[in-house]
Image 1 (cartoon, helix red, strand yellow):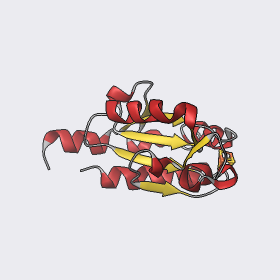
Image 2 (cartoon, rainbow, N blue to C red):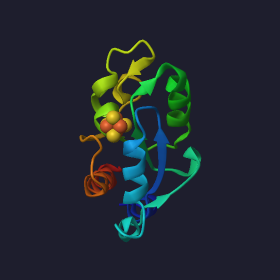
Image 3 (cartoon, rainbow, N blue to C red):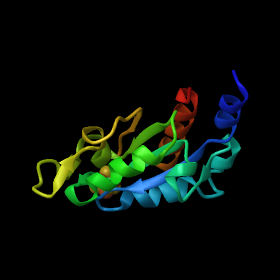
Image 4 (cartoon, helix red, strand yellow):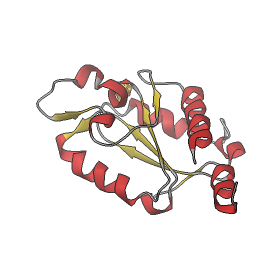
Length: 138
Ligand code: SF4
């Protein structure tokens, strides 16, 4: 394992990108990243820019309005990157599936590496997905 891979796995930076849905998943992502659940024990840190991120946490169904922005944010995350789809809306579209305003679940727009089901998933499930994402970082 080279130095940059070692560093990335020890300190993966995360960007959270909400695409739509009811925002319930966003609240759980925020909760998962609070000191109560101590995501920093895995070295994980929330970042506000895709250019500094290793892991992209995407919540909500992808609306037509956000579709191009999601693709642009994905392209700005440096390779190698991991995408985690958080919540039923992001995984399958859930109740928004088929809506005229919706492009579809996240994997209809960008490649997804880890899926977390739930409406919304618990913070523990989100953290578990982050750990899986860290393991998948090449
Ligand atoms: S999965 Fe449930 S909680 Fe999450 S955005 Fe969709 S409707 Fe809201």
